[in-house]
Image (cartoon, rainbow, N blue to C red):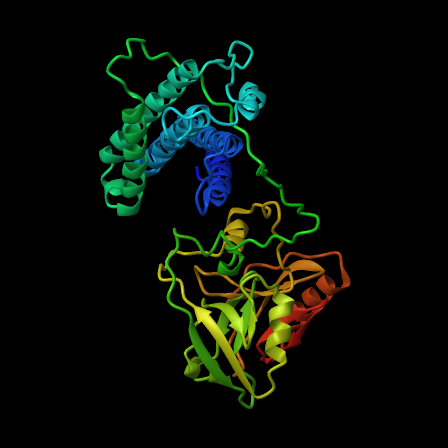
Length: 423
């Protein structure tokens, strides 16, 4: 939902509105001179900000967005839209009649810029006499007062916005200023009805625009990549906290074997071996070897990191808290299905049947189960009948089995075409 097109469109419009507001604030920073051109430019900047926030409010009202947006956000956007529209009418009134009622100034500049003020400029003509311009200016001030009152009304409806004292002071100050200006223009002998005023045409000196990132030049990294493969490390699975173990190599090695990849699993642990004494258990997942994060690493890479530690091996491991958890690669083997897109299986690995805890070696040249003996030459568990492969490796395995030969008692992993003693 957070990445849907309507939501992203709303955020884009929101950021553009905030940039446009910053442009306006920079323009009025330090005050606004009461000159015709300055007041008209500020009025058009304010109208542009109002239009930007109106677009944001429209995007927030989308059926896929409005139920997920906080009410305070919607209220704030609507308040700003009304507030800046009111400011645009106020500054146009100042440009038409001057900040002090009854003054007449720079009529030539006003006549030059008047056609750029309203949206419907073709139907509007600058009144030639001062009283007509005063009536038009009074109508703009009246519109500003009404819009300021609407902004205050929406502000008071939101409990969150009422807690923002600075915003309330800004709204009240602008409202009071417009009322005082209107009071100076209101006369007892004025029997003319206040005319309706057209909308102000928004225009900005600095037009913000959205620049799409060029992914060919900018390398984007998934912020969740460091958590590991999603199929394993997700909210549906429960894991222990990572624990660090330090294993001192013994006379017969570290005392464990590994299988699988992304991440690699502890396939077996020797009884009373160095790994078991360090706290390593069968079925643990290796997430770090020394300073290397190996949650995404392939089998051969993890083996290489382990072999690079001649004396002491420091690893971080995690344990699945649910006994029913099965590695997705093991699940596919049990189901007899192929790996999904983007995933690979590592045939050069020691695998463990989680149901009966029997160990098998997977040969690269064929699917020939071979029992893995422990280091004390204990009797190997029974294994399923071998599948005869047409390769030379398969024939040799069958020949050895018929002749009664037994393999050497080592913990092994398959590196290349032949099983090799590892630790």
